[in-house]
Amino acid sequence: MIGTDLNVRVRRRGSRPAGPVSLSLFGLLLLAIAVLFFVFAFHLRAEGAQSAYTQAHGIARQGSVISVQNIQHTSHSQSGGTSVFHTARITVSLNPPAGGLSQTTVNVPHQVSYVSGQTVAVLVDPRAPGYAELPGVPDVTAKDWYAALGGGIVAALLACFLGWQAIKMIRRRRQAAY
Image (cartoon, rainbow, N blue to C red; front, side, top):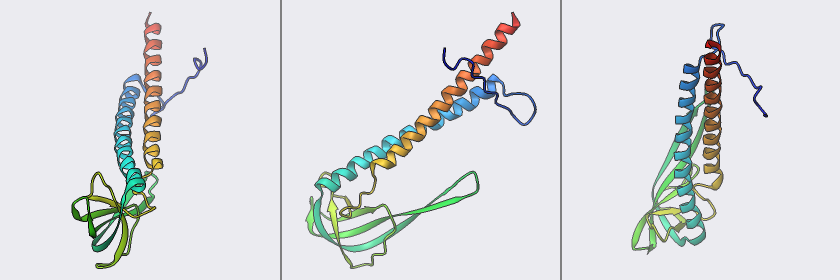
């Protein structure tokens, strides 16, 4: 059978290989991380669907900027590097109103430099008029949730591999005891 001779020795700081308990615990941790990635991916998928719908069927309006909130997102990697990206939420007053609302929030996937009173073109979601985007600038795209889904798949595969290694180790120990 393919892959039955694969013997990966996972080592800790000492000279002994990792045991089935530590492999199982690390596998469970990876499984929990995979579940979080999957939940996040499906959340992003829903946001991406709303964004795509707004770009395709949005009500075009002119809006006067009331306020701009640029949000800085920072992520730290284990190697010590830091990455920073920005998103923005713009509150605009619509003229004429869309969907019964005269004010909406425009979601932008990058930083903006609009000032109060500036006129901007927006697309208002007809199903949820409190949500809007800039024309041609979707807030969430398919690649965003694909990345989260990919992370979940990788973590789940690693968890399965560690579980398989732990089971093999337990079987070997039981056979050696007889």
